[in-house]
Length: 65
Image (cartoon, rainbow, N blue to C red; front, top):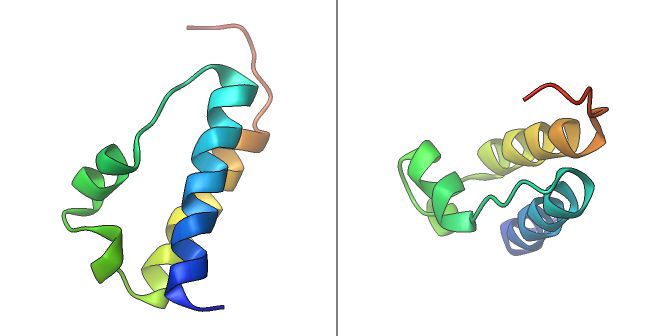
């Protein structure tokens, strides 16, 4: 997969987190956490970001806040 496809996958999982948990995370916030724009992220960094987002999206909500 190209990094362009991975960037769109990041957006997809950000939407999944919002739908599943009501948590709105912007792409800008992800970029701020990385310290650089997603455009500059390499393949390995994008894979890691996507894995983290998938884990959050698939986590069960325990109701604790």
